[in-house]
Amino acid sequence: MTMTRKELLRLMPVDKEDVAAASQIVKIGFPTVTPVVKDMIRSMQVADSPVADVFASFFSRLGEQAVGAITEGLWQQNCVLRHTIIANVVSKWSLEAVRQIAGVLTMIATQPDDCNNDLRAILILLQHDLVDLQWLGGWIAFKKERWADRNELLLRIEKALDNPKEPANKA
Image (tube, rainbow, N blue to C red; front, side, top):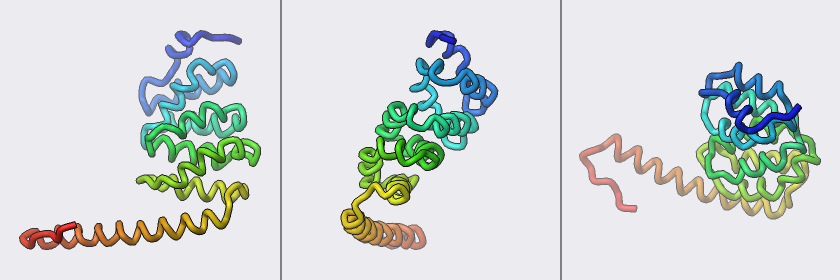
């Protein structure tokens, strides 16, 4: 079966709760949905979205067939999208599929964000034995040092909030 992008777009979910539409798109299957794959990936950047869950499950089953689209999604600077992809798609992939995106996972491992995608990427790389352990040990030591600095700053902010009349320490 072949469908145009225009036909497929009419079937796409209207919001993050439109599971019926998401399920219909998934049922059409790959490769027929190829014209809207980027739209499906974009739909996964919404937090707490049942539609994102449906699409993530679809991409997790596709494995190697989804490598290109998933790689594009991982390059986006949206930590919620990265979290959905890493936690719900890539974490379920085979070694062969993960190996194809090891470079982008390594890059993510060096970029902490609010969703802990760096640590999730490291865990996947470790699980598949796709990371140099010496490099990783050095990188983890660096991360721990940065987190100690960040924690100290957070404690200073917390103290300032507890004592609003006292001037906050300068950075």
